[in-house]
Image 1 (cartoon, one colour):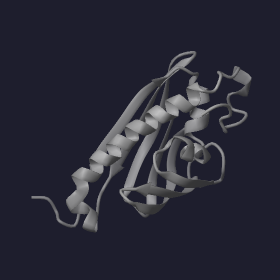
Image 2: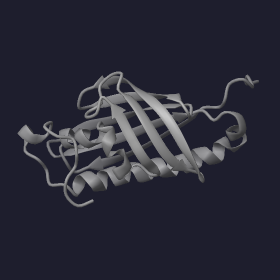
Image 3: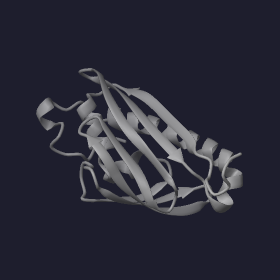
Image 4: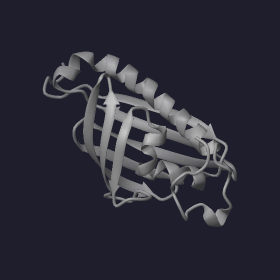
Length: 170
């Protein structure tokens, strides 16, 4: 029998292939300032310090989801530069996850978004429904990220890490 004090955990993921160099994708994915450009419902996102995430980067997010506004503070846990970062919430929603970029070829990479969420209180009876909605958004997010990055021309190797803001058509 499950402990009523602990909420059920829903583990979700979405993945895609992006036809751009892994470093170019990482520059967008690891800079939280870009989140409103590719994450469903993100109204505002700030990171301290700004720029490419490092271990202990703190984030503040405002997200519209399921008819309400959620304000969440988070923290980046581990970072393998150019490859993977983990994160967790410290207030607001109870969630954690990872963002991973894996080079497949010089101009092609795989991207994976992982999310674990634990509904509490009044959210608990609707956990399965919330998980389905979050999975749909996560799938949209990874595709929106792919479209955003692929709309930007590939950059030469010496420019891949010089700036993280994406320019060009969205």
